[in-house]
Image (cartoon, rainbow, N blue to C red; front, side, top):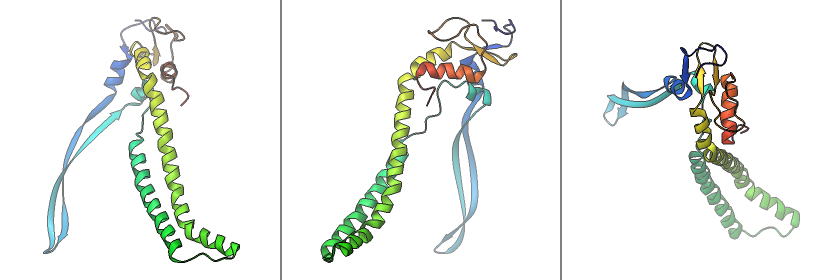
Length: 201
């Protein structure tokens, strides 16, 4: 368990304990006052709010066993709502086609179709971008989810020396993981993430 760099144990701590000690979570509640406008005029307003927070130290973030995973759900929902609007506009344009016949001249017909459908086509560009981003997030999250148990197993056997500022594994845990070798926290994290298969995301 001793540090491979200084050979001492007095400032050595298990990596999960370092992570836990460097993470603060909690709730804060506040009372807010102000003025609102009602039918009778300006009225005083009082309200409360509760906020959940989580703060991590730089050391805890550098020893994290998995990256922060932004959810793809809100983006998918936003893309779906915007897609419904775009489909509605496409429908209105199609109804507009049935109300007035297209010109018989091919060039004028193309200009009419382009003018009619240009707005919904331009509106669909952000929808495609939102769905592409949501798909990439979902794929990244599934890759992290598939390897995180293996990465957490390796991560949980690591130690950190506060005196030297290095992380290490005191004994072999997995093939390819160096043991009794002092590593900078970022290198330690790379080995953990590489074990999970998401070091190059």
